Image 1 (tube, helix red, strand yellow):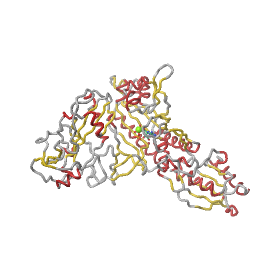
Image 2: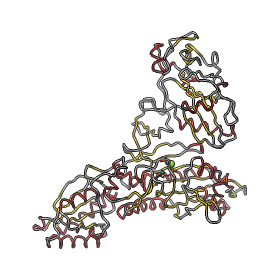
Image 3: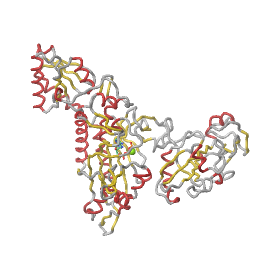
Image 4: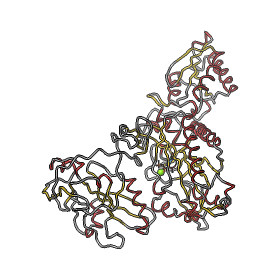
Length: 601
Ligand code: ATP
Ligand code: MG
């Protein structure tokens, strides 16, 4: 491609709305343009990158025996009503764009395709003989994200590869899941990315597990906890660890103490000269279920620990049926205003005990009249503990479960694992932390959708069973941008060779120099004939401008047809290292081909 014929505009200044380097660079280098909130145009350079990423993804999927298809983006609401997700997706979470057509039929714009694919499976799969199958597509998805940001990282319209597999049993599902794990590792490695596969939260769906593929970068929205021995890595949302040992309590008799102005763990531990590990901290949460019911939750956890809200959320979804609900809409620590809506009298905030009486909750049909009391394992295991007295400025010391406080009924793990904690698999290993960008997620779904939608098959014994499912996503556009987040310098992008829009750029420093033009045109022809993807900077611009642009757009190799032509040589510069080499004109193609092949391995 000739730059003189391209819509090629680079910007000197960072776009005002861009917060992270990859977003700034992709806009400045003319790869993407913002059209609206979370809506971007992929300009020709970006489209080439996206096609290369897609092709790598496609090759690795095909190698596992998966089959490519293309499913509709316009999805009838009936499908989503069958699975039970229409209301949560359009109203509650509101992630799905919904519309009504001229016949008054409701439709959604596909944020994901479980409903569509399960409908197809329901109609087409009859027998175990047709199993397993794995179908995938590469397509634009629509999601009305609450906070679209970071360019392509969190868009409202983005490209995803999504695959769905169907099986006769869990064993077969696990086999495909392992093949997907390997395929994902291959994809990311081939795209030139540094990544980590981590255990992930499977939400309330349960199932037997899921794994995320995190591209490591400081700007990542996710936190990963891992051990040096590489035997454990998990998203912080899911991570488990051993808490520090509790220190023996200095109190051995139960009494009420005046503790003025001790409404934080820190001030209380200081005042009572005890360790935070001696304290049972009680945190109030307000949960709203999808049927509008508000449930107040009292979480008791050891004073030195924090609540992991994803784990808490999962526990509350598990008990949703108790409140005639399916899922949770929101979970938060209620602020003063929210408290006013349900508290019958002022709460002893900072001094709450695990047995805070239910009569603090005002009588209202939409509000559950009792607290749900969840005790984290760390709190359940300590003795002679300190906790609030349900009275401002007072605490109890030397308290015990089963004595002064009822023995815990619901003991759960809702504790946040953190850096420095000992690992469960080997207490000599401590957890380290890193930031990551979630590029992919593979998931053992089980029978959630097949059961809801009645997608069954007949097994070898002639019995009708629900199909066992897996699903596997890659954010193609997010992945492409994450490559930039991982690879840039002060001058611009440094594309990994395998996904660079072009492999080489030929710069003619002075287009009025005939010899320079001739040599460049010849090389350009040679590259085209050799299947090397080349850009030719034949613009009437100063050499300095051309070098700056070449660095900014991040083409892996640059060839300059400059003064050295007199000795029959050109300069070959590697973008990543800025190393320059003089190469004989007749060796350029073979040298470059070799470099490119090596870099793609
Ligand atoms: P996130 O937690 O980042 O919102 P998700 O759990 O909603 O992601 P999935 O539904 O598993 O994501 O989608 C599969 C993949 O699609 C993700 O791993 C991610 O790479 C990509 N993806 C999801 N949402 C977006 C988005 N708004 N913009 C770009 N890529 C996205
Ligand atoms: Mg999401």
